[in-house]
Length: 268
Image 1 (cartoon, rainbow, N blue to C red):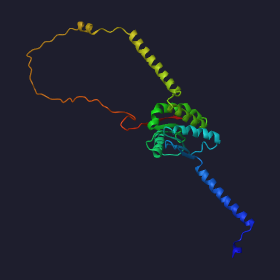
Image 2: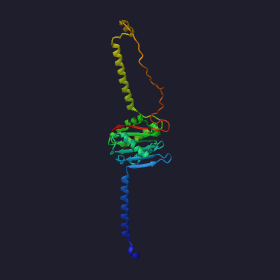
Image 3: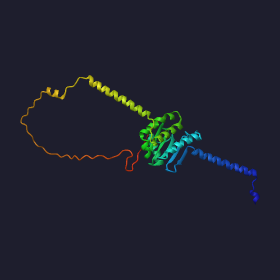
Image 4: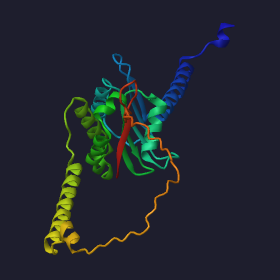
């Protein structure tokens, strides 16, 4: 009976080889499915770091570069969730709406920030919520995307993501980031306003001086002739004018347990 189940060393080798082959194929298949997704929780704060590279834009990174990117995202989890998403297929017509919908499904209204590289709409988007949004405001989110969109245009998605989270961490540390586009826009607005003021002043200075009210009145020859003047009282109406009340509303994420959220984007 024992001899019926006896396997020779050669047969044992073949069985082990077949088992190992199946195991490796299964492992490789599982890895390929999950290759673009990584998540990690900060044990001290409970916040999550999520890397959802649906387009495998970062698949060719070496371990060292990927570790640097994860480390920058990991720093954000001291203040809130951190997510990086690359996508090409969704039903939204607005990049901000897609980013906020993705964020809310994963993190609800928790504090955090997310970078989205959206190939459908060709937009780079930064959105944030809660405490993080107090540092990464809508204005700063637009400035970050202004600063990094050129990397995405050149196909350097790693540099694009790394710069984004480095600048986010700079803001979370209470420091400032470069905002060249904002300064250029302000400068252009100042130039336009100055030209407009000069034009109005030139028009006023070149025109003839207008007569004063007193001069107009002195030139008028007005006569009033009233005959058989009668006054008749026809009725009385009342109008209710309630006292004005100051509005104590707050915008964005004010006090009282509210929260703030928003973001900014740039084409690439």
